[in-house]
Length: 139
Image (cartoon, helix red, strand yellow):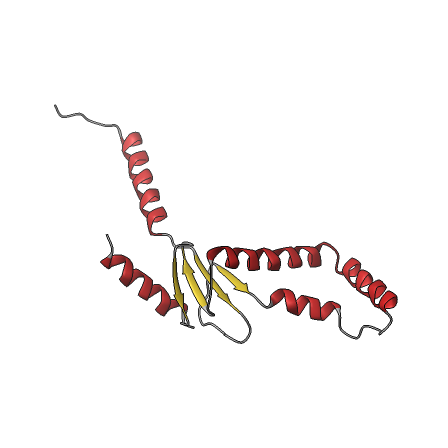
């Protein structure tokens, strides 16, 4: 039996198919690296494992040798940095935690969909191409 659908449901069905197809092809690309291992390309998320140490170095620059004075100065710097500094610290430590939870062992690491990783490739496009070639060979 042949059924006729009005244009409304057909448009909705076409939109649903298009959205599913685009979601299936969307990739989430993370680059996990540090300042010693620069990477070319723009990932969805850049994780620099040395970022917390750089922030700590900023906070401890030119501290006096007296421990109490140094502590007060760091507290002032943290207060002066306000919510922006708090967010920056939280983000960098969360980045390190996320990289650790993925089991990253070598830098740079380019990660696709938190499932596939290419180590040592500094070019994001080349790493993605390698991952996609691998995925085509695996069922």
